[in-house]
Amino acid sequence: MIQNKWLEIALYPGCIQGFFLVYLLWQKKNANREAVQYFNALLLTISILMLLRVTYQPSFFREFAEIILLPDVILFLTGPFIYLFTRALLRVDALPRFKLWPHFIPAGIHVLLVNSFLGLHLKGVLHILTLPQILVSFNLIELAAMLSLGIYLWMSLSIYHRYRAAFYQKFAAPFIGQFLRSFLIVCLGLLIFWGAGLVHKIYQHQSDYSIYTLFWVLLVVAIYFLALNIWSTPAILELPVVIEEEAEKMTQEEPIPAIELEALNQYMLSEKPYLHPEIKIGDLAEALDQPKHRLSKIINQGYNRNFFDFINGYRVQAYIQARRDQRFSHLNTLELAFATGFNSKSAFNRAFLKETGQNPREYFGVKASNML
Image (tube, rainbow, N blue to C red; front, side, top):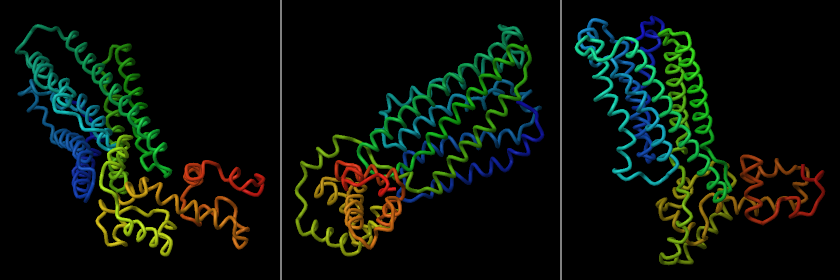
């Protein structure tokens, strides 16, 4: 344990904030429960360890030295929890039980073997290792933890990039999960910082854990920041499944009645809900007084489109009509795109190309200067 008055002062509000964030995320309705469970498991583990840290009594750990390394189990839990959370958040199929539990073997080894073995040496019960060998063991634990966390962060980042690429192929809509990439890259940067600290400590032959402590403080800040982003952006817990076989399954279902398709089309043309940039399928289902799953089936099966492409199809057609209307000739491309429901230039360009097979300049056959 590292004695640091300012660290202890910071841990008090941090511990309370962690439990509060767990409560807020658990209250999310209709959320991605699997993702919330994994992320809350990480938050709870961190918060409980912070609680143990602020209630730390040196006399207790001198008496029970065999558990002195127990809090370091977080070293081997952070990576798996982040990885499993990323998989769940991006709707990757859940791992079967026989593939899930091996991710927690390193944490189990640390708790059941490493913690007890080194703790009993520190207590003086065992005398197999010398003090220099014990210090080397501590460094090896750090190194193993860094390798574990680095591998899981890299795997999480790989899943993120695969999902984002598939998302843009399937949806002509902004990807709201961009901040997950920033979080993972920041964690990798902090990991490099931690590795540099370990190298410096070994090179100087000093048991200086200040960089180790700073690493975990910054990592907890990053995790809390991610939790706040998830809490403040509910849509992140409603990311769609990106599975190519999904469309094939839908074609085998019974056809949607033509009257439902026509009713939906008439509502879209008369009420123009697509002009709202932040419209969600739940909003449209509520307006039509239909269950969300039924509306999703009508759009997916009846129009052979996902919700985003369905909405963007109307937006593109509205843009084309407006571009040909002299009353809107004073608006440039971006202004007109915003007026027809798009919320970014990139989303407009992707949707227009997907809908028409051409970019706006090619479609209208005009000079670039007129499309600015």
